[in-house]
Every structure is written in structure tokens, then in C-alpha cells.
Image (tube, rainbow, N blue to C red; front, side, top):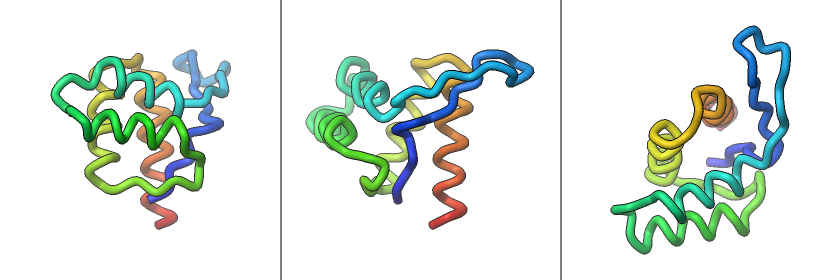
Length: 94
């Protein structure tokens, strides 16, 4: 499944009046690489795949589960919400 994470809108206020556009793909790749304890070489492979990838990169359901799990455990609610929205939009379009 392709997930558009390269230009992700992250709303930084509860009323959604302010947002930042971030390259979440590279940020998540760094999170997996630096905080993905227990993922082993599969985690490293996913981090490299994301870092070198694009919005056209396909991810398996297992890879999406890893991404969602780490994002939920290590990032702010506004970032979690933005990533979940991107994944859900990809599910609708798939």
C-alpha cells in the first residue's frame, strides 16, 4: 500500500488553525532506526526503505503496523493523528 507521508500536514493547534508540512517519511525512518528496539534487521530494512523511498513506495500491512505502533509510542498526538489520517486515506484508495 502506498502512503503519502512526504508532504504531511500536521496541525499543531487543537482548533486546526495552524499546521506544518513535514516530511514524515524521513522522520519516521529515523524513529524506526533510533527507537525501534526489538525490530532487529527488519526494522533497519524498513527504516532504509522509508528513507530511500517516496510517496510511491509500497508498504505491507506488517510494515504499516510497525510504523503506526512506533509513531503512537514516540510522537506527539498531532503527529499521530496526521499519520493515521494518511494511512486511512490510503486504505480508502486501495
